[in-house]
View 1 (cartoon, each protein chain N blue to C red):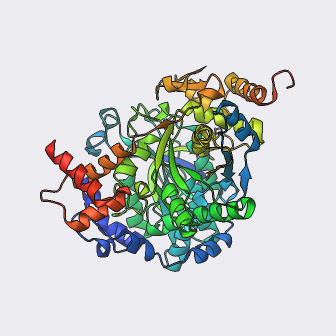
View 2 (view 1 turned 90 degrees about the horizontal axis):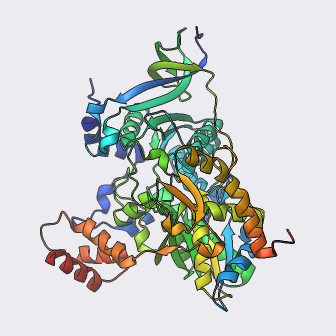
View 3 (view 1 turned 180 degrees about the vertical axis):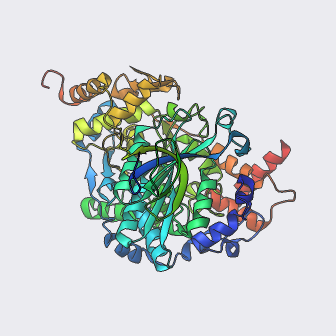
Length: 100
Length: 468
C-alpha cells in the first residue's frame, strides 16, 4: 500500500498505435505513445492501480502507479578501455610517449 | 467537451501557440513564402545591452574565452607548414545551468514573467530544459519540461535521464514520453490546460538572446588579442545557436567567418522507435541540422527566428567517434572536462585550424557541463550495451547506428565539408515547391537573404528546378 501524499511515478498511454500521427515511421506506429510523470499521490493505492497525482505545477495527472520514491539510475557506465588509450595516445603525441 | 484527438489538437495549434507566445506572426507575412525577418527580430524590443544586463543579473553571460594551447600545438603537428590557427573556446558551461542555452532561456523567461504568465513550458530533451528550469526558478515561475526519453522497451539514453534529473533538481516538472513527433501534441495539450508561456527555442526572443554570445566573442578577442577572430565555429542543430551568434558578431561589426558543425547521423530516422537508442548524440547532429537549415519553418512557431543559412559560410560534419575522441583530448591536454555534445564544434575546429595560417584566430563558441550519464564514458558504455561496435580505425568508415570509430591517431580527425550550394538549392526547393505561379521580386529577394546569395542566384536555381 502506498500512502496518500507519497511521491510517486505514474505511466499512461497518450496515443494508442491506431491514434498515432500519420507521418510516424512504421516501427514507431506499431507501439503506443507512452508518458511518465511524477507527483504526489491523491489517495492511498497499490502499485498497478490507476491513480491520480498532483504534479509539481499543481496539475492533476492520471495513470497507473509504477513506484514510490522513484530514483535515478544513471551513472558513469562500465569502464571503456578505449578512452584510456585515447588519453595515453594524445599525451604521447604531444609530449612524447616515454616521458609520460 | 473538447476533442483531444491528435488531428483535432493539431488543428487548434495556431490558436494555442498564439496565446502561449503572445506574438502575432501574421503581421510579418509579405507574400506567399516571404516574411519580414529583420522586422520580426527588431520587434524583440530589447537592445543588445539590455539583453546583456538581463542575462548578467541572472548568472548568464561573460563566460571565459580560453586558449587551447596544447590542442593547437597538437593540431599543428598534422598541419602543412605555416598552418594551424590558434584555437580558443568560449566556456559556456560556466553559465547558470551549465550551457549556452541559459542565454536562450533567460530572455524568454523574463518575457513570460513580464507578460504575466504563471509558468513556462519547453519541449526539449537537451540542455535547454535545465536552462528554462533554472531561469524559471530565479523568476519564481513554474516550469514543465517535456522530454522524448524512452523507446518502447522503456530504455532511455543516460544523457537524457541526466537532463531530467537536473530539471527536477531545479524545480521543474518533467513529463517524459516515448519516441515520436507527437511530443508536440502533448505540449499543445499542456499549454492549453495550464495557460503557460511556450518557451520555444525558435521565437525572436530566444534567438536574440544568443546575440550576446557572438558579441562577447568579438569583444573578448579584441581585449585579449587586439584583433577580431577569423573564424567562429558553432554546433548546428535547430539553427538558433549559429543564427544568434552570427547576429551578435555582426552587431559587434566583426567579420569573422561563421562555420557550422554537426555530428553525422546520416541514415538514422529521428522518429524511429528502434533507432532511438542507436545514436550517441541527442542533438547537434545532422538529423536536425540538415532539415532545420534547409527548411527552418518546421518548428513549434509559425516562423522560426533561427535561420542559419543566412549566416553560415561553411558546414562541416564529423563522426561520433571524432567527437568522443576530442572530448577525451580536451580533458587530457587542457584539463577541461566537458560534455561530449558541446564539443562537436571543437572536433571540427581541430581539422579546420589545420587549413588556416598559424597567426589566424579560431573560436569554438561553446562548451557544456558534464556529469553522470552525460559524459563520454557512460555514453560509450551505453552505446556498447546497445550493440554498437566501438573500435579504433578511420572515422570516415563509421556507420551511424552500427559503429563508433575512434580515430586511430589524431591525423584522422578530418571533418567533411558539405556542399553549400546543394544546401542553398535545397532551401530554395523546399520554399518554392508548393508554388504554382512565378516568384515575385519580393520573394526572390527573400530567398536571396535566406540563402545569403543574390537575386540572380535564386532565379537560376528556380529555373533549373523548373526544367527538372
